Amino acid sequence: MAGAPDEEAFEEVDPTGRFGRYAAVLGLGSVKKVYRGFDLEEGIEVAWNRVRVRALADKDPAMVDRLHAEVRLLRSLHHDHIIGFHKVWLDRDHGVLNFITEVCNSGSLRDYRERHRHVSVKALKKWARQILEGLDHLHTHDPCIIHRDLNCSNVFINGNTGQVKIGDLGLAAIVDNTHLAHTIVGTPEFMAPEMYSETYTELVDIYSYGMCLLEMVTREMPYAECGSVMQIYNSVTGGVPPASLRRLKDPELRGFIERCIGQPRDRPSAAELLQDPFFHNIDDDTTGTIS
Image (cartoon, rainbow, N blue to C red; front, top):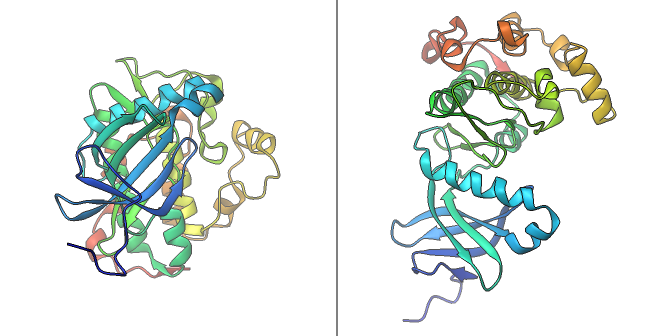
């Protein structure tokens, strides 16, 4: 039966015929292009992630390993606050790796916060708690998983429900029972100082989480006052906090963020932060609006 004249056609269908890809692009990552897709079996929208492995391998072979690591991680993780994974396959003819993940209908938390500038402290706390729950799942996974690139562009939200999910695990590290990792990776504004020493634990994610919360509150990238990556590095390793934190007037928010970005020995775990008074009575919180 012929489709309606205004019916949107698929650009591509997966080998099983279950998933279709539309032309609309949802996002561009460091190693992939993400398209809007559809799961015909379940009748839901999905994200179709498409990576040109052949070109990527020629440019940076290590990136291919990172991508495969992301796919393996996604397949093993099942949590309400981590992006879910559906299927992966390699298109050898075109040198493209495709994988299907769930889609959050409102995009990244960074873009969402920019669109919605007047948000209550209660809403921010609810988002913050969900991110922590996802981090706690990663950090207590056996073996432990360190995200290593947590920032507001890698956290996604379903705006109609307020559900928040951690995504983009392409730089994540699986560590043994020492919980030590050694590679310098990430987004400079969100990287903990100990990452530059090349020996660190999952507590680097807590530091990044604190910077995420700071961005969520202020709608400003941490260290926006710095004109270069070197200036950011000097500030981070010198213990100079972002100017946006110094300007933050709410003592509760500022204190909580300061605990997250403190020295590693003083930094709480995700599980400990979830028990922090910051989240007490969150569902009854009637605090004001942050714009």
